[in-house]
Amino acid sequence: MTLLYHGLFPAVWCAWVVYWLVLSRRNKVVVRREPLLSRVLHIGPLTIAALLLLAPHVPLPFLGERLWPIAAWPFWTGFAVTAGGLLFTVWARRHIGGNWSGVVTIKENHELVTTGPYAIVRHPIYAGLLLAFAGSAVARGEWRGILAFALVLAALYRKLRMEERWMREQFGDAYQMYCRRVAALVPFVC
Image 1 (cartoon, rainbow, N blue to C red):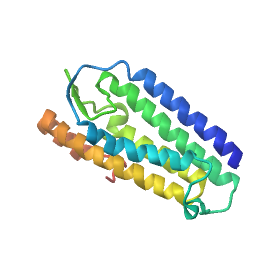
Image 2: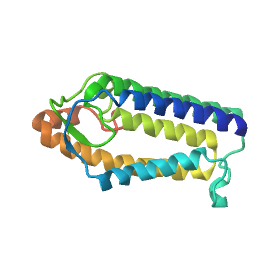
Image 3: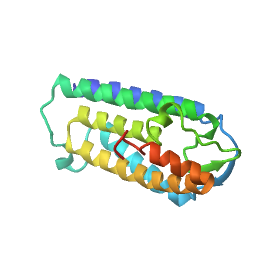
Image 4: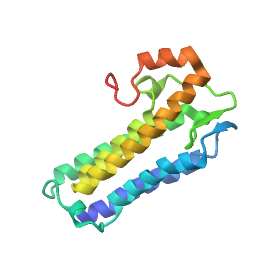
């Protein structure tokens, strides 16, 4: 399973990154953008989390200790959750179209999208990424997966809070009503 993990998971994540980069060229003009330091504060932890999950070994031995024995079920369950999470982000990214940005922004003619995956959760890209990292952590089956997931959760929650504040400023009552109807990350929960 270890060799399969080191081949299959990087391939899936790399395919997702390439797809994401290709789509990132078709966006609306930015009117307002988060500062560079703010961007680093969520990209840094995401990068560390990815390295924790994808690296063959970690420098701190206790992070490499197993949570459960190596077996097929956690590997394939983790892979299914990872693939499902990444596919959910792709659906959300395609649905939001030119309003998307990897940086918290307000676009020219920015629209409040509340349909498709945005009718399920307000931040489907973040929700999908959390699922994908959780699946990768389950398949890895080591303590470093828990740390990686925690880093991703903290980084995306920080970014989500900023984005929510900007959306409230931009869309006012319409965004407030949307927030009352649709959970942020987990349907019907939060």
